Length: 257
Image: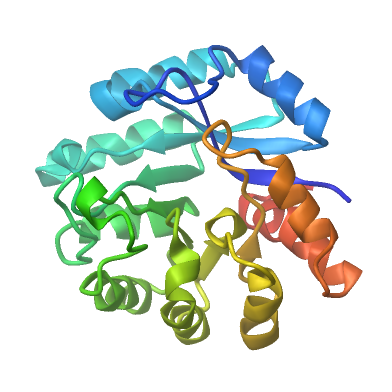
């Protein structure tokens, strides 16, 4: 089975982890050990330095075709139409096909489609995927996504149906009913399976929504991606669906053969 990881990062994050990847070769070595062919990767430096961290990512992964860049977007960089236009031009010039937003109480912003409409429409027109990574404060860490965010996500997906959205939150299995409802209502929304840390959750979503909106993710190095490789390999679903989730769905969106 081929694996395309939708969710990993380079660099040292602000909060310590058991391990981290200082360089692309370290990440690639881990991918080889687990059996992951390709990965979408962002850089932890972009959490603090924004565009500078994204540019560092591009230097780190230059001439490494197995690594697909994802830029972390700070909403402050989109404060005016001119800023938005310049950002979109830079994304296109760097051939970036995934951008990552981290809404939620921790960073104090939401994904209102009317607030970032020009940017989201620009992403959709360029075929760039929006990866939504909800960030919670420690006081709310029991929740996956704040209740007020579900209608905001629905509004975004329905008002800009050409925009492909990947959804992730570390404890999304605690809101599996809302998640499946969103997937059924909005076919342009996909789900990173590393959010489903619950027994047989992958099978449950496949049964109710199909395999076409699920993507493999490992969230290395915060998580051990091997657990999600095993989770998918052992899932009680057809082998064809496993391969869709492991590689084909994401590869199709990114035009990777």
